Image 1: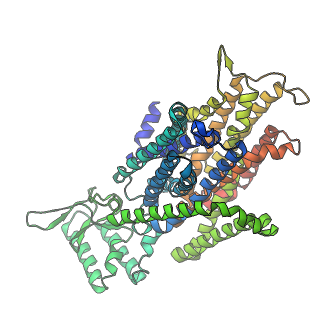
Image 2: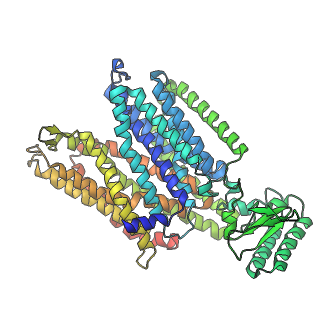
Image 3: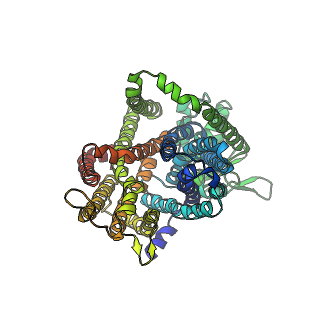
Length: 616
């Protein structure tokens, strides 16, 4: 535990505020999800919608599928226009409004679900993007940081069904949805007060120091790129030669001001945006009324330019001007406009919903059969094209090729992630039915509700994540560094081992014809959840870390959306897998054992290529 505490102390303070923000957002999501189907099937006299079971499950399936689709759009908007920070505020507020709509009753059900789907698209990919921006490339703390945030996700997932479910059962479903809305509101408030602690992470592209757009803004402002590079190089040389001599400071100042006078006024902002320079750092007036600049570390030069303090190097990333890390009034105006736009889109979608089925019926059979695969192929081609053209503009052909390789790495790993979640997500279906129908749940006079087994995974996450955080941090800081690909392989192996245990338990209570002859010990499922949780910690938070590290800077949130789409696809197939396999008389547990180990072997086989593309 002491090692874990020491590891915690080594992370930025902003990480723990993001932990709390994510925990409250997941509290809202899982709390609503826990009671949604129950609300849909409950009789109207009991405060529900009175839907048939099949219709309720259909609504739930559509909702959970679209929740994983919209992050692609939200990520793209954040990368190109909004920045992750504004996108999180938009998503959080929209989701809170969606919960309120569910609370109001049947008349606003569809609008509420639409708002939750769209809001999640803005929030989900961008919170992970900001976590990644807190760390430099190659920082050994990165994987541990995502494991810590993953603890927040599961803390929310553990408590929300208990709180929202209890309120729904005791007082009515509207109280459960209200609790979810309050949880989301608390998450937004926490994030609002976290802005200083996360620095400039998540700012719009033109203000984010990590964005490649900063170095290329001169084209938009008609500045000479070569001149800008020359000025930046001179600043860097002066900075390195600085020896606390005031004459060097004056030389830097003179060089800046001379360069600015030679060019048109548009170049001012470009010089101030040079990679090693940030103006408006902390300054104070001396006794003569002149600005006296202060840098946060000794030995770093600080110069004045047109009445502003310009810090260099590490200080440029950590300047503490009072408003340096806060959204501006214009930013909040943008957020308000987007929220209104999203509400309008959600309302229009709900009005068009009755006609959607009619449009599908009018489509030719070839479109119905091949439309989905065609869209998928087109999307992949577009991703590679976007990566190549953007990389070529920023750094030439070599950069373009590397960006394409980075996107390819994420897509390949996303494919293998589908195999992991295909098995892991049986927890909500086949494994829950195993708990209900084939597990001995009676202890004395008390029968354990089958739904309680769903809390085992979050508990194990909270118990094991600290140990995994320490393990990954120490390994990644040593010569025994375990690459991301090998962690994924280990996760798939753990998934297969879990299903071996589950199949052994299943086989022990069935005869040769598959008939049930006894009931399994609940410890079987506890053991399976333990092994699967260890596999999850080898893969899920590590995958989030990978996307923020490997993605081209202008595509981080977009690729995070792609990553979540793979989870959505896995969820869709996981729900239908048992029915599909029954048609071929294949045991689902045997099938998942095979797919887990085959996927692990294939991933291990392509690992040298992936390592080369990731330059590891």
